Length: 241
Image 1 (tube, helix red, strand yellow):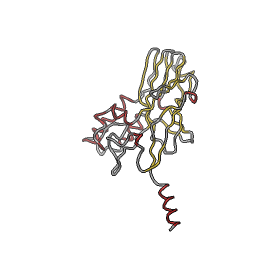
Image 2: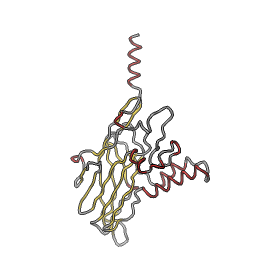
Image 3: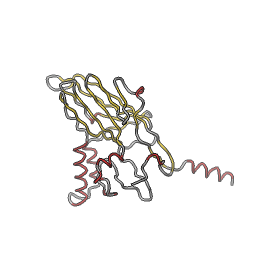
Image 4: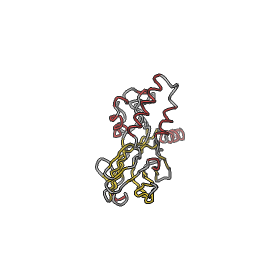
């Protein structure tokens, strides 16, 4: 009986699911040079009037951003979240993607290009995630289309339209211009708690053919807490519709 109790205790201790807390910036001391951390979670690089910033965006905020697309349960068309849908028997909604708001302000160079396809998320444990562009996200949702007509296709087109309008496009930014949009990564594995988002090959200067001759790489560090249990902690705020 004692052995049975011990085995039962071990089994119960090992059960449960993982629930991730919100992504938050690491302290300013752990960020790179010329980088500031703001109270709203933004990590901003600013040098010579070039400003590039990242802010993690929660599912709750994304649902508020697209309210009419987030209230139809499994038929919700918010392309970044599951809306208010919940798995059968659960009182919480899983995370669909890992989303950041990327803002670039160029008041320093004749032209700057921040290519979102060159962004990667690198966890301290070695996991690496590539940014998902319009092609990858459209392909992801195309799997839900049962035919090129009717409600399924209409929902696909609505999602794709939102993605086209709100993803960071990576257009050339000429002097005095600003641009913002979402940078999207796959959902993170439960063992990822500390990580950095790396923006590679940011082009600052170009030759006469328009090819970049001066590039930089920026890293923005973030972290989160991961809980294990049968229900998410109330602090996560993911148990209400």
